Image (cartoon, rainbow, N blue to C red; front, top):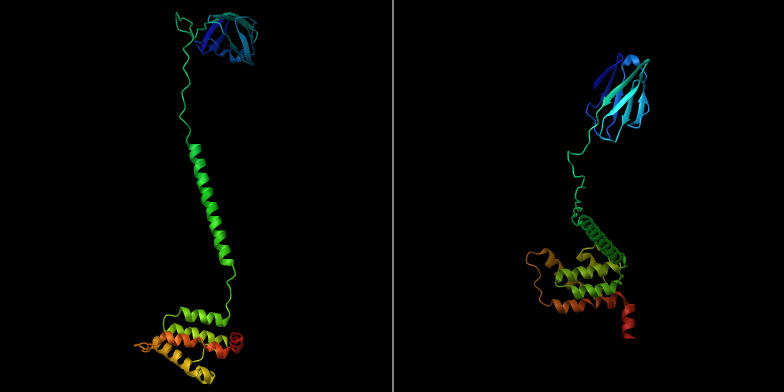
Length: 242
């Protein structure tokens, strides 16, 4: 603040060395409010308060204030205003600087590509999952017991597998799977007991004996086992004969 004394009134202002365009606050003593500035073309009044007035000028030269503070009048308060230009400035505009070239934005394209890959992977997963579920949901054709028996006999590679196929077929025809070999032979028709005995006993040896089955005519026995259908399902035999 710079004080100015005139007619016993202290007027201060700030900043102490204002430049063109700065807001200059002119204060009166606290006990001499309000402060009133006389109108002037040297400055413009920006705002007022009880003991301060804010002014501004855009000319680089001193301005002279006059007015009143409370009941006391004042005049001749000089406020020097400096220019923002350097001394002997050529007043030429600064050269234009071309805008800086920004780097090519790759991040959005990388994000888009990553999103597309994730979407493709998700659609492929959905496609294969739907295909798998469709395949799993497809009904499995149910074979008739005799057809299943023939398929299992054809796929059997040893006595144990042939005996299991025979037991499955017997179970489908009323001979429970819990029956032992002796019980099955006692309940089966006499016509099929010989082939049953050969198949089931050799199968038991193959599964339970440490030496396995010693029989060497497996292929011929498997063919004979297929004749069980002629006895257990006479309808098929009649149709085959017709």
